[in-house]
Length: 258
Image (cartoon, rainbow, N blue to C red):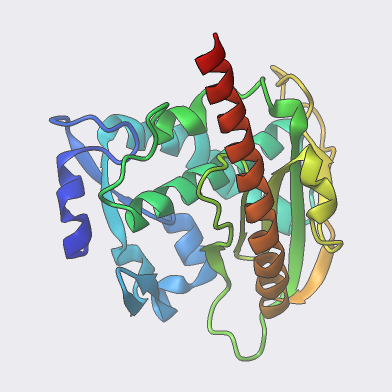
């Protein structure tokens, strides 16, 4: 842990509780680090380059660590294998992937803003694990697969590309052979053409159901995937932030008039 993050040991990064038993959590899960081989090549962390990914941790309470491991990391680690093998995604699995992306993005945000409260409305755990039925039917998941590793690459990608500061919906990144992004349906046309798209059902089904979404293998290599995803993400981040700010101003106006 870097000097800037040492004070996080006093509270859980996910639920903000203090004085509870803590574990160390990797920003990126161990299964993904090994899958992408980034522990050999290293990542950028705490202002340094080529830091072994397994060394990049900060504290989560035991309860949050267990909840995320059981509800997200375990299932998503198997889901990545399903996606990369072309076996498709169920509606339930699409939601899992979105929630997992929100978790990764949230942890990265907290690591980059160690002195700022994540949100006054909810903790990261609440954002990631609480029901999302109010917006579920408006979420579009975009996924595209990578055919092979670029000859000059030492590892597969592992990083978040979305840069929004206000929107809590849009998230994007490239992880192993999977490029993915989640947008509100208003911005579906901004998803690059390489991505297959799937709209979540309005209500989460109790049973997982059959495979409904088969992402295309449309990127020739990791360099192309990262480049296309990053360029698109910069524009989509701005669009989602503008909407979030507009909605917040409208709500404040309504509250002041009531």
